[in-house]
Length: 274
Image (cartoon, rainbow, N blue to C red; front, side, top):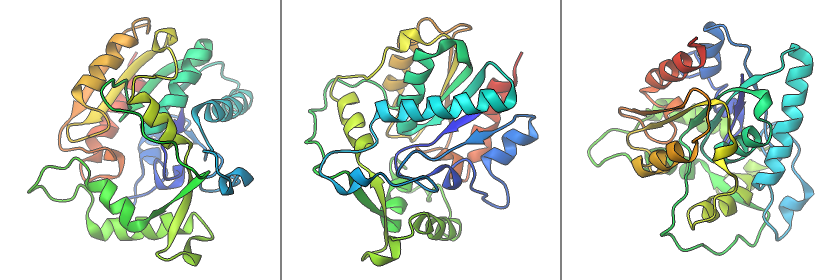
């Protein structure tokens, strides 16, 4: 099983991050899966492209699909398996979906967690004028709260968020040279999301053949009910159909939230079922 991370933090802060001593990777491994993950260029332990200091967005979907392909070639060679299951989060579901559409014979199952979907009403935003942007710990805290109803507690305890944020800042060796400390991330995903939400979906979901799960939290502002419905209709040729799971008391980063085990169980059951 291959995990594909989203737009602002690497796999070690996502599927590989241990909250209360246990990560999503640990959960999947306990279910018997051989779990792989990697960092896109510009994140975590991967190289920072020189173009990140330029004026054109870096790290768009087409570049990400190529990286997923290279990683999958490696997994297939090492594991001696012809097919992999892919679990992707947020913006990462765009290149993961495009990859699954391009190489359907390589995909066993596909999980789209918190996926963006086609929206027509939002006017396109101006493209970023830089190859990368800065994300601070406070920006990340704000993102964790997005979509949570007024009066509800934070979906991640502050005591758990603080060490996560420290690890996040440490993922960029230069973060401490900035005021406030911040991580430099590619701006390409911003452009991809802007296009998706202004009527230009970047691949044909109808070319995906793998059985697919669309899963999201009830408070997720990135995946609304209409978004999940659009994806289910668009994935018309998925063998075995498309499951949609809307999970209680979850926002966009449910794998790092208090109610994460509900997500782990839903995804684990889908991947393991006969």
